Amino acid sequence: MSNLLPRARTYALRRAPPFYLQLRIGLAVLALLLLACIPAALAHEFKVGDLEIEHPWSRATPPGAKVAGGYFTVINKGSASDRLLSISSDISDKAELHEMGVKDGVMTMRPVEGGLEIPAGGKVALKPAAYHLMFTGLKRQPKQGEKFPATLTFEKAGSVTVEFAVEGMGETGSGDMDMDHAE
Ligand SMILES: [Cu+2]
Image (tube, rainbow, N blue to C red; front, side, top):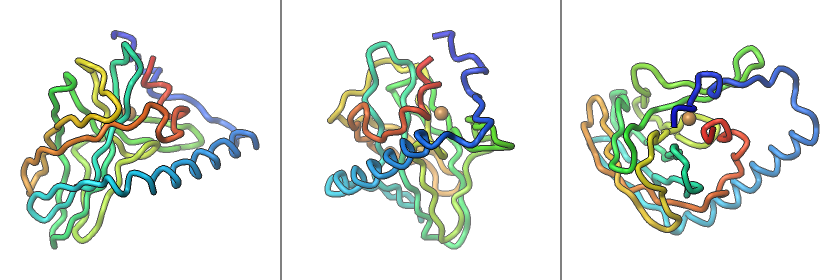
């Protein structure tokens, strides 16, 4: 509720992670790769202008959760760059673009200012622990197996409504990264 304090968005990883953590991250990456193969058969994509939006997906959330992630890949087949400006969905009050990264040994997550560039001829993947969407102020919990619509607005290509496929709660092994959202 009102607990999304700024402090929750930044946490320190001041030293190199201990070996067991590196192992956990390694296993999480492996699990991700394996999981990435399974939904491939269920992949879905959307087009607007020169852009293709591949496999938008989200994750089921525990009762009472106020935020959910959103992930997809955008491919720009055009000769000019475009920019993802905003997102809206009936499932939440707001949807924000976030980025995660490590700066000076500190892991941070913050809203992306000014939209996310999709380079000409390039692609950008929104995924756990990188750029991602954050649906904030959830009006209900997304349920595994359903799809919910959201509208993405790009600077040049315009708006497109896509369907986010809701996968299982533990689906990416990125729980460590998303813990701060749950506070
Ligand atoms: Cu986030």
